[in-house]
Amino acid sequence: MKTIYITIFILISMPFIGCETDNNNQKVVIYAASSISDLLTESYEIFNQNNDIDISFNFGGSISLANQISKFESPADGVIFIGEKPIRILEDNNLIDYEYRYKFLTNKLAFVGYKNSKHINNLSELLQSKKRIIIADPALAPLGIYSKEILSSNNMYNQLEKNLILASDAKSVLRSLENHNADYGIIYYSDFLLSKNLVHYGQIEEVSEYSVDYYMHVMKNTKNKIQANLFYEFLAKSDDAKLLELIASRGLSRIKK
Image 1 (cartoon, one colour):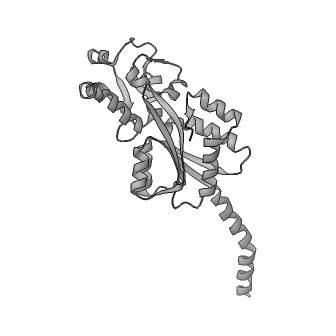
Image 2 (spheres, rainbow, N blue to C red):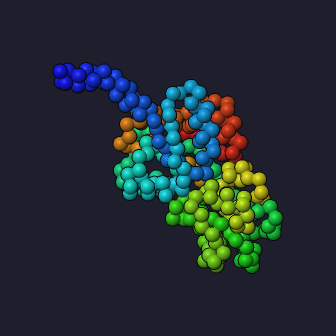
Image 3 (cartoon, rainbow, N blue to C red):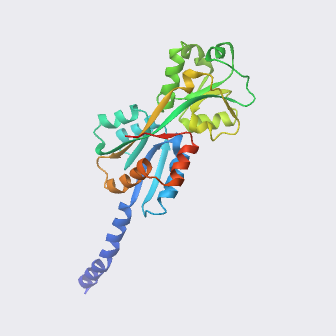
């Protein structure tokens, strides 16, 4: 009698187990650069109006996230990273499915100051100042690599190092500046457009003319390739008016193939 009950339980449970598995396959985890966290969150809301796919994001510095995936096997189905270094980390560990990859957006950098900070016309003026300067950590975020590259090309990084504050990612730089935990910093132009307390020094051309690209990749071993790719195609190709307005409002531009 006991055997019969167990058999019946299994037969009854099978549809529910199958249903749960299907739903889990619809849950897509995307690791993404913090600099476009607001854009991706709002884009997903638009996408989700016509697509029943559950997507969750893990935002942070692209290099830090790439290391989490490659060293600790963090469960990412896809990535949206800025710059080539984090993508190379994944490539070197054979983690990317090359069938599903896109160049997504172009962003620019901005040298900014807190609204009450002394106006400066060029980076060399920072050498005479004891003001706090914040950049992203080059070991964790591409923004830090670009910032260090700009300062180093002007022979300033080592001289300013005692005044530098390093933040974990782009959004941390923005928050610190907004809260006046630093006087000046280098951020993405898209983040400046979200700011309330910052002044953009567009005349500092070595920063304002620096452009960088975002890349989207699906991971090689994920079971959710189709679902992740549907979202990527929407981001890269959709002509949805709300999406296009959202991208333009952040000062970003799509990369046309």
